[in-house]
Length: 430
Image 1 (cartoon, rainbow, N blue to C red):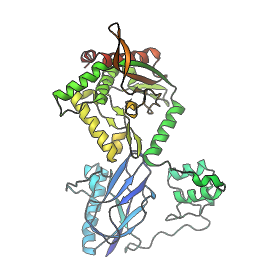
Image 2: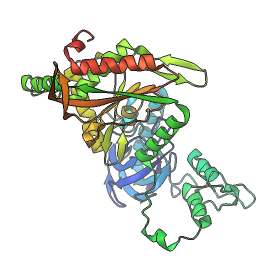
Image 3: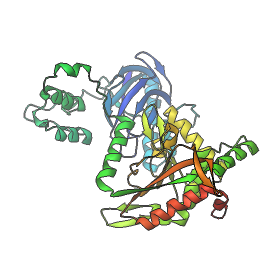
Image 4: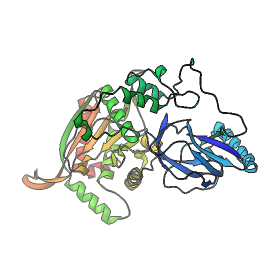
């Protein structure tokens, strides 16, 4: 028999850690090649991680709720000696394909078997190495007392720095004398002041995963982007009627108000390309992007996320509606990949679904602008010289004042309002 330790793989997008959400296997279970063994949550999305060899689960190195650094032990699998040779060949093939850029590494060591799964797989299979019990030799010895503790994770270094923790004074609990996140968190807890009696009623919710990513993004946006907001009320009675007519004409097309406003935004960005941009602060340049990757805010059980519709400018209204619906469904299921949540050039925020009229949204860094749509409600409105009840919404537009001035921002917002009030105007800009 031989044992193999699998470590948390590099999940891409610069991610350095992941939280264990749910183990799909237990010690003693038999696993097959490319079987999903654990679901983890990164700062971007929930990800299913497969195992690249067959065998018996010997050990789970982290429990549900634990945060594991990339490269840290995740699971050990014991295989029969005869099978180990075959698995070793598969592992070597995986390493060769990974170096060559083969897409096969997405679901194991070069297998071509189709695997059905509810969530997207990790960007690379679990990396394998002999376990301490394997014939390859004893585990690496911990450093001596005179050797300084090692801190591998940048997240751990940042956490220690933010709380004034001297890592050299900590007793490392990781293999090879590595200081882990829990070592720093324990030190922080030890130095915290005693809780007052009223603190017993407080509820503390850790910022992690998707929520921490969004918190970091909006905080950076407010620090770096000098934003300004302008708004206008629009009579969208005819747009609401158009949506109803489209749904009756083609019930299979998932064209709602979000899709219509997305189409209006795409047309507006073609007319005002200055807004489909970002600021390269390091080079002091405004970078205009030729392709529209449209982000939209979606509320999920894990918090607010911004899925991205790639090349929205190339999609028909029906295709745009279908893609918005697909991404919304996957966002609520927690099955979006990190790639689905990055790379946007402009964001549409339909906060009207929460029953509110207006907002001053925070720009999705590093984008240059965001359009917000309030609830659509009946209001008295002067139309054709008479006061009549009309469907009215408030449109708000937040923009990076480094990228454009009020003239461009006002021009874009007025164009959006005109298209919403007179949908036939949109036809001339498709």
